[in-house]
Image (tube, rainbow, N blue to C red; front, side, top):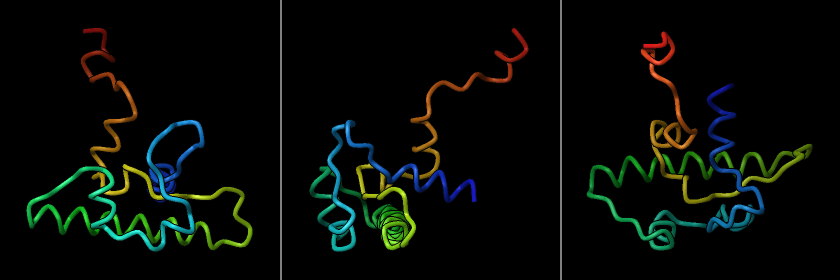
Length: 104
């Protein structure tokens, strides 16, 4: 459940951020090719397939969230929709190393 929440947080756009984003309704019709063009990305064939799978998974989660009748918030596809887990985690800020934790 924690992972699903993290994924949902990665694709949700808060209004004031200024990121290029696609409305919840428009997210369902956005193709991966359109997404790549919008964000100026290109991948070699193997990475393309991996990134496309990530994009499609997150787009499906956006649609699922937005179709919930009791939803209190709306999700949207944003520029992070094709990021790997480690790329998203790197955006969470400084994480002290174990050496830092010991005061070394």
